[in-house]
Length: 217
Ligand code: GAR
Image 1 (cartoon, helix red, strand yellow):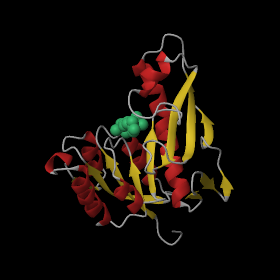
Image 2 (cartoon, rainbow, N blue to C red; image 1 turned 90 degrees about the vertical axis):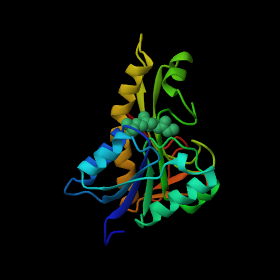
Image 3 (cartoon, rainbow, N blue to C red; image 1 turned 90 degrees about the horizontal axis):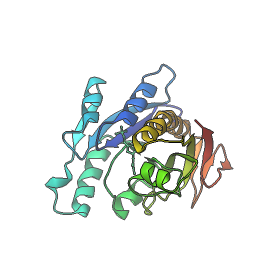
C-alpha cells in the first residue's frame, strides 16, 4: 500500500457529510488514500451530488430493484469490486448487510456509528443517550463484522451532554467529531497501521482498548 494510494469505495444512503469529510481529506496534498467510487442504495441521496462535484464516480444500486437482501448484496459486491478497492467505508449506509457481504470484505470494511459502542447499537442513538440521563455521548469508528454495530472498535470521540440538550443539538455536536475521526481511521488503515484481529483492533502493532482509541471532542 506504500507504492500506491489506498483505494477506497464509500457506501452512502443520505446526505453524505461524512463522505464530504473523506473527500476533503483525500484531496489534501499529503493524503494517503483516494476515493475510487461512491455507491448509494438510494438514487436521491445528496452524497451522490457531492461525489459528482468532486469528480468521483457515483453509482446507485437501489435495494428496491432486488427481491431480497441476498440478491441486493450480491449486486452491491459486483458494483464495488469493479473499482477494486483496498478498503470499503460505510458512511451513513443504512442497510443491514448479509454475512456473505461482510465476509467478502473481512478486515477491510469500516463503519461509523453515532454512539459510544457498545452502547446504543441501532437507531435513535442521540435520543437514547438523553433518555438514559448520560453525561457523555459520542461516536465510534469500527471494523464491520457479522454482529450489527458490533465489530472491533478503532477510534471513539467522546462529547459532553449539556443540560437542556435536544437530540438535534447533540447530533450536531457528535457530527463535528465524526468528521474528524473517520478520515483519521481511514488514514491509519491506508498507512498500513491498522488491523482487525479476532475481536479487537490493532494500531501500530498494539492492541487497542475495547472501545478503540479515545479522543475527547
Ligand atoms: C452519521 O451520523 C453516521 O454516524 C450515521 O448516519 C449518519 C450519516 O450522516 N450512521 C449510522 O447511524 C450507522 N448505524 P451523513 O450521511 O451526513 O454522513
